Image 1 (cartoon, rainbow, N blue to C red):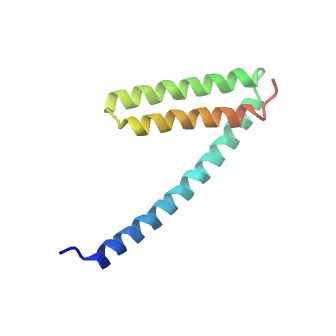
Image 2 (cartoon, rainbow, N blue to C red):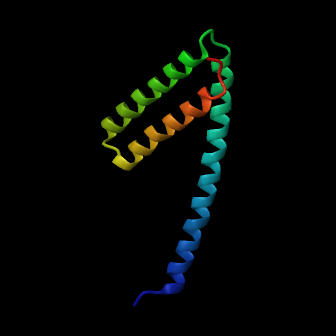
Image 3 (spheres, rainbow, N blue to C red):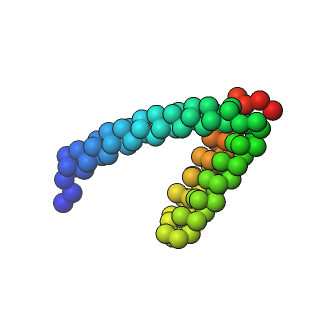
Length: 95
């Protein structure tokens, strides 16, 4: 017989942990975006600098996920995140 009280406790704990991790991811993303924007603004060609950084990130993700046989969902989300960061960073940089 399944103990629903234990299952509900586990679900509640997982929801809390997920919320905490989501907060950490949000803070990390905001800080990373701000740092990259600041760095790229110092370059002679800020758009090209951002493109170079994101291209290197994509290559690193491809290499890591291929070497570790990582989950395809993780790889896809990581690549989507790079695209999202690239758009956010480039949106504030001089053309």
